[in-house]
Length: 426
Ligand code: IMP
Image (cartoon, rainbow, N blue to C red; front, side, top):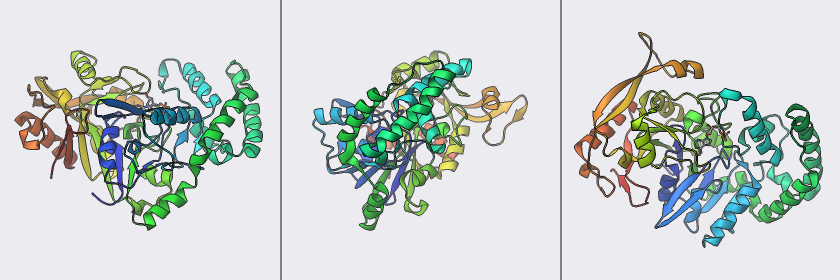
């Protein structure tokens, strides 16, 4: 793989990016988050310990790696402070190697309130967001009314900015949503104290990243969520509010496209989705229940049960192309063991018509009928398999089918949550 690698999810998030980033981190000098916020939940297993990271790049678990929360991320200072404290309490030192861009937008209490209130107004068309204030924060960023970290850590600037923001937001909260107003002193006290705590981590990360590039250091760009949740290419409006796909990495980190040498796509061996919106291959039956229980498909951020279904090669083909993926890592392959038959969706049909491409309209996607190809399952537990050719024949056939349907090589197959449970090919 090239010097700078982008790791990105190709489905609806929760593909297992955290594990791959953790495993690959040791080969890179710095790990960079470039979009999303505390809506993400990257689970990493180190020995018997389990870490769930929301904002801090997963590379933090490797001593000496620089970890950067770049400008495209929206940061909740309360959540970040808690995460730093929790890492320190478990012996992981973050000082001098965790950095937050001064251009990151700050998730404010009114963003989190608005997230819930806006959802309530959608009735049965709810997006079922994580309620972390992500959409309202990105909305303020685009409307040019957001507060950035550079402003948060300067009390002279933050105080009047907060007063001005609350003046407007409280009118919206009370007059439009009928909610209680937010008290200035409450927010000032808590946010001023987060600012003091986080100030040493805040810097110009564009300058820093370009400096690392000049020194020949290698960067691992850590995507959050998945391409089907991308604000442009996902199942809009049932998406998150950031540019999840690979193009977002350049905007979200201040790096030119030419500095990304390779894109590794992370794919679960089946599909899951948490939240509302179309999901053509969903199995709301015993197959879905089997995948959910065996794959422990419950949200790491919200604890919500994930919707489960068969792998969707139509959606995958689309996201492979949009991201310019050069190879794939196939995750949670062990979860499929024990199923007598495994299916992959290879086409969408409406009536007698087979669709070309991937529909942009969520309603149209809701109505498609998936066309499946059927594969033989395997009984054997594969959690301890170390080499690709030791997998059951049927499992190797399944991987080969994914390669042929996407025209992309599967370079890694994950067979369990531990770092060691990863089959590397080549
Ligand atoms: P938001 O990002 O909280 O606004 O939520 C928008 C949609 O994206 C909802 O369907 C969420 O469930 C989904 N979502 C956001 N972050 C993640 C993630 O990290 N994994 C899976 N789904 C996510």
